[in-house]
Amino acid sequence: MEGQDANNKERSAFRNMEKVFRHPPLPAGSAKKREKITQRQKIEFEALCDSMAIEVGNPVRGGSVWEEVQRTSSGCVLYRLKSMDGLWVIQNALSYAEQRQILSLCFTEWWQPPQHTNLFPSPLISPTSIDHHSDASEDESVVDPTEIVESKSSGMSMVVESDCDGCASGTPLEFGSQRFTKLRWSSLGYPYDWTSRKYVRTGAPAMPSQLLELCSKLQQIVPCPLQPQAALVNYYHAFDTLCGHIDDAEDDLEHPLISVSLGSSCVFLMGRDSRDITPYPLLLHSGDIVVMSGASRKWYHGVPRILEESFPEELWAEDDCAIPIQTLRSHMQTVHSRINISIRQVDVF
Image: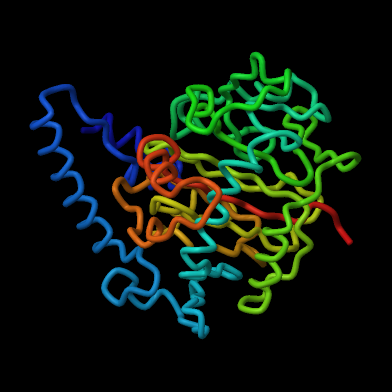
């Protein structure tokens, strides 16, 4: 026990909170035994959520730490975390139809050329950038080195694993193919060069119109003035995590960072300007949007856990997107269970 206490003291407060929420590994054994353990873990997690008051707007789980600021006629609810300058959460920011549309784009147009991805590197980026930052120590990352890891030098987050063999030929990959399951991130708008820590402006693809419209809509609800120039789409598998980091590679850090959650719910940790300060955990659900503005734009944040079996059933209610809804549902239940889109302004105007 003394050794355990010493290890906890050596780790940062942010790291310790990641450990609290990280999904415990399932031991080997029979399916019945594993199911029993899984059920017990779910009960323990529910109790943890209740004890830490992490659900935004819930009087039991959210306590009095959140202030409801506005409710719109469309069902959006804007909350402000009282203890943090500039941190806003918009529940139900996207209708289920809007969520399906964006998910469909994530799995069609937004992961293929000319977008810069771990499967299709942009010709504007040096090939060595794709495998950069593969030296993260085990204590710096919440995940396996082949998963989403923190870039020590940039403070941004990317995926070390790359499977680009044959991608340069331009042969389109099929949705749901074996190689497609290795899709981890896509850089929209200005592509980001991980080696130089620079965004490429010249020749960069235009920002998707759907994200421009979304940002325009948000500015009517929450004070988040920005000119969207780049976005990072993270494709999470069920047990992936994102370690604590600060998005600080942009020239402009005064305008907000907008983070869109789609698919499975997750625990989101919002820290301060140091890993040694204990972060605040909150639950995010599909269709929720976090706006980090003011001081919180420069604070640590991460995702230590994705909640299994947490898709809203309403997400699959209509077959109104480019991918057949049952195909999309099956894929997200077995491969990419959560999508996060972070939108940011890069240049100072």
